[in-house]
Image 1 (tube, one colour):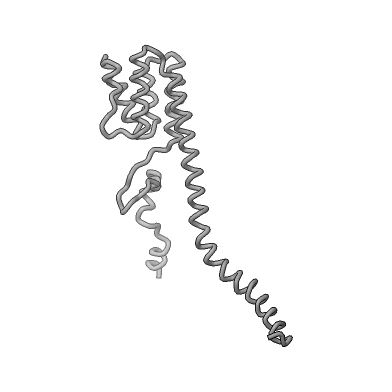
Image 2 (cartoon, one colour):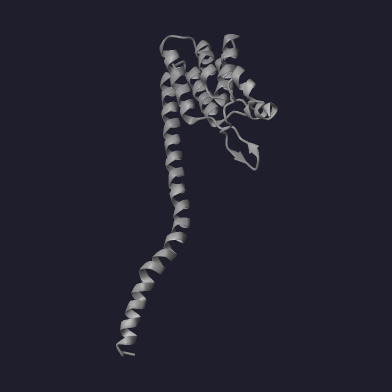
Length: 189
């Protein structure tokens, strides 16, 4: 009896692991046929651009600012920033340091292009970073609005299939039966 109660009261096997370390965060990356495709949060990317601009406005060198931002940037952008920061710290040419890696996402590609233009012109990339952040946020808002519109269209089909028969059965059929009873019962036909 005591053994049965002990088995019922005993915590699950993973309980002790979670007491020592917090549980892993749930995987929220989109899946297509079982293959995980990582996707960076566009608002986190825009915040990374803004943080990079703030660091440069505060007077940090580009290499130090890129290293600081890479720690909190999304993975796709962080890898590019880390690479550029390391190359700039070693004294590489900015055009070479900001070359776009072959597996870079669109956020890293646009950052590298803007940084190369800024280095070639000898100007501060602060204004360009602000514009990149605005474009990223606007694109995220447009994507969210488009997804909401697609959801509205996708849900109207099943709702129409459910409510249209009910409307016909409860709204139109009784009226037609009532009119038919009067017409046929009145001797018109």
